[in-house]
Length: 37
Image (tube, rainbow, N blue to C red; front, side, top):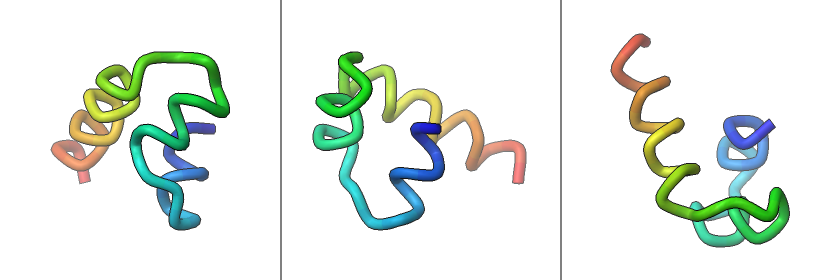
């Protein structure tokens, strides 16, 4: 879900706010996903 929102143009902070999680967590998930691609 976080990845979808990010790819649709939302930033880390906005994604975190929507999902009620830390933007740092969102950043870590995106970074981890990017390393696997």
